[in-house]
Image 1 (cartoon, rainbow, N blue to C red):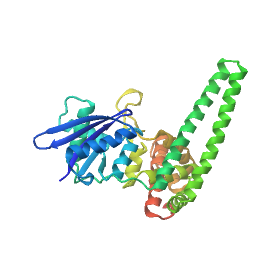
Image 2 (cartoon, rainbow, N blue to C red; image 1 turned 135 degrees about the horizontal axis):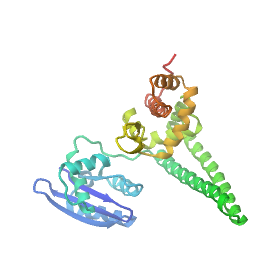
Image 3 (tube, helix red, strand yellow; image 1 turned 180 degrees about the vertical axis):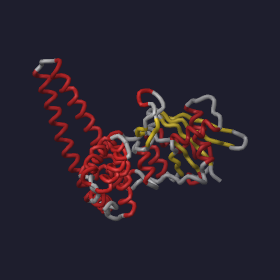
Image 4 (cartoon, rainbow, N blue to C red; image 1 turned 90 degrees about the horizontal axis):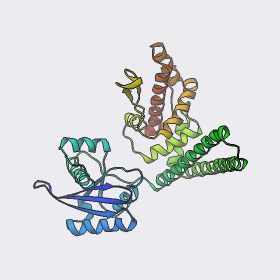
Length: 328
């Protein structure tokens, strides 16, 4: 017999909701800080109140930026069963059961109910291997530095039009060079980390066999497929925001565009890879020509190329076989 817990996570606090009795709708809530000490208090509260071993307690939570991660790893290490809920599905579930008042406490209870309802359909979350977790940390740092660099470049471009201070310009130039240097060092560290681990190294080699996938995208996809366990190619497209979406309002009314959900950073780099693949990848080139001949716009053809390229990359990693073009 399982006990069902929902935890609504924010940066500063954790709202816990326990379904004491699913049939009679009895519940109990608790608020604790989202800190290392607070995580230990979560365990103490759960064990004291439920009187169950961790293996008999199912905890459901949603991804919340990075604020859920340390708690999730900690609870898993303690032996609890973890459901990482899809936010869209959890929201639809809340709507289906008619939740009227939305608060952090009610959200926690809804998550507990969601975990109970989906127990037979969901897989329990398990952490990725240590080498994938380290790669994720390195890639996040690279992402942050790249964003900082772009901000400084934007400031420099704006400053050249509006100011004349030599000192400020010098500061901008020095910061830009420092960021570029650190980015290069971090890229080397990431490449070294991948090369030291057989699975990561092999996956990157497989990805490099895909026409249009160079060092940047092979690094990105190696990270993505290590950090996320996709079951099929469509899930990859959905995560990257590459699913076609029909617009029915504004300037784009009546047009089909990409959903653009998920990480914009990877999507921007994939855009450049798809441009190159339109020339160097036979399958992508054939698809582009077919779509253009059918009356699709260049942007629609490019969006399709991005989607196909991501799916091809998933395929080579999933099959553990190098890319073999289908177009003659």
